Image 1: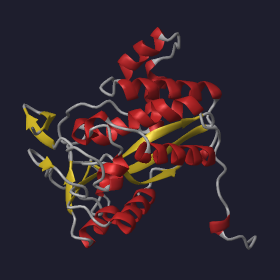
Image 2: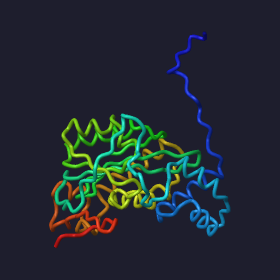
Image 3: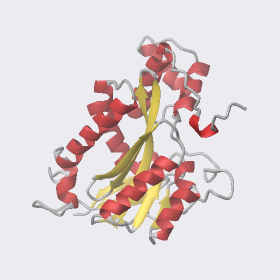
Image 4: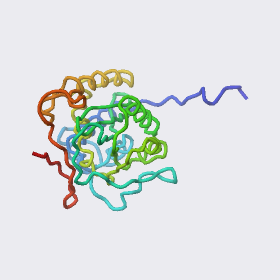
Amino acid sequence: MLGVSRSSVYHRPVPLPRRDAELLLAIDKIHTDRPFLGSRRIVDELEDELLCVNRKAVQRLMRLAGIEAIYQRPKTSRAGVGAHHRVFPYLLAGVPIDRPNQVWVSDITFIPMPAGFAYLVAILDVFSRRVLAWRLSNTMEARFCVDALEEAIARHGVPEVFNTDQGSQFTSTDFTSVLEGHGVAISMDGRGRWIDNVFVERFWRSLKYENVYLHAYEDLAAARAGIEVYITYYNGKRRHASLGRRTPDAVYAGEGQGEVPVARHVRSSGVLTQRAAA
């Protein structure tokens, strides 16, 4: 009746209350340090920090931010709903990772901000720990993950294996069809098995403690600019002991002296460990 196109009208999101934003930041810090803690034990940790809150409030905020405790549970293959989602088997048990572009991994994390939060996806090369592409979004839709994947492939070619968890963004046809179209073998962890994607989890911890928590970004634009600066530093300047004191950029390009220990994924009694070949 008004002649206004639906695509030109958007709902204006309501900012989180200040109290909720503070609690989300505290919950995220606890989860980053101890991802195995559930809502009950997070309530206890918050009380130790003099932040008194009931369990239902913590559960609500964890659901809102997509945070959940990490543990083994039954029926873990139910990632997405419908025919547009498919779960692939885990392919990296006992596989030595000894060269760039052999295995890429990806994951999503929560970035806290005073008025809400955002989601960050990153794609890493396991051998060099180099961040190949990333995207920041205010929604959990699969599109921002697909954009990061397409950028990584356009800039760096294709890996032999691509490993993720069973999140709906990664099981979606939009995401997996890009990999299948390039002949990439798709590997997926059991749901909740963060240790299978341990390299990207270590990157999240470094990013949050060395950048995100220090700057407390006010909005999406500031977070995007600051994270870009950090990732440039992480790839090109930050030396890793596990890489023979070299940077991810140098190892990915095959520069420098010395050998990088071979990462080997081994499952034993339900636990994945990392071994370095002599």
